[in-house]
Image (tube, rainbow, N blue to C red):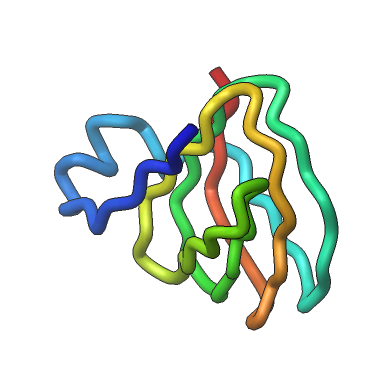
Length: 89
């Protein structure tokens, strides 16, 4: 199971309607998370290390458009407070 990460251009963000999505904010912390649905999010602020079940660590942060697949279990380690737009499919 893989996480999709890219640095989108403004037109792509507008085409997806990212700026109309809800915003989630979280302070520096660590927690386990399971995705019951696919989530697409755009990081406005912050830095996170996402540890996958196989031990790989994926770094995401400001300016990243990230897709977390349905069924993914992981551990979030928020290094710098997060503010992101998000949408569950």
